[in-house]
Image 1 (cartoon, rainbow, N blue to C red):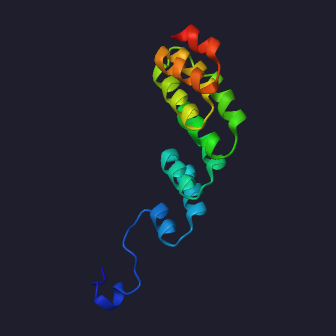
Image 2: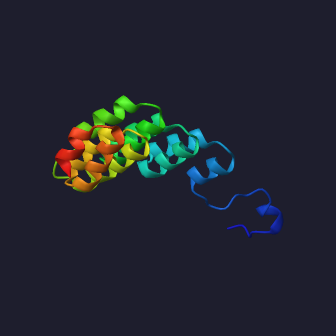
Length: 144
């Protein structure tokens, strides 16, 4: 066994995570791909979000079963129709995801969609407010 000396350590990189090594070298897309290959989907999503590559992160969120995150990524990717499609398929018993999606649609100015999702989540107050903001006074009155 050879003895370590300061000279032998020159240029030697300590054992670091290969994804971190790629990030340190500025190779973020390669780091994200490696994270996917290693099954580290949340990490890959985070890397893609840092790169503003939301469309690349979207299928990963779906693989994780995090539809609410996928909806957010669809909006960030400029795919509002895909966000609506995903929201439409949220199960009625998943009130937390429906509420999260409703709040997201409201923040994006899609108030009528937010109202529908809030209703499905059982939040009549947010539904009514969303319909009011959408100018749909019939639905607003119905949900008050």
